[in-house]
Image (cartoon, rainbow, N blue to C red):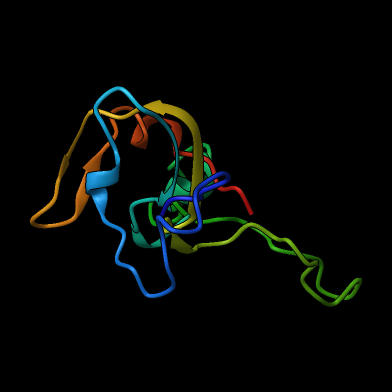
Length: 124
């Protein structure tokens, strides 16, 4: 997707097809995409929990467990925003000022190096 700020009205008309051939090598572009989806992940991978400290005294099966999620009698609920296991990845990512390298018009993709390296944080 490309945003045109200044263009001649005769150049583009409604319904015209715009593809990657409009980019030249060396153009500076802003990129929007999605991060790689990782499926359902536990709290150790998703939130960097360290798990239970020692595995002695019969706690060998609790190594990657999240631990307590709230009090029993008070507040008798789980607070909003409690970090738990869940779906990870496939977040919207933005990147500014990437140098355009190459495009392929037959399969309609455009290659920008280092975009994935900058797209490791969730924006929303």
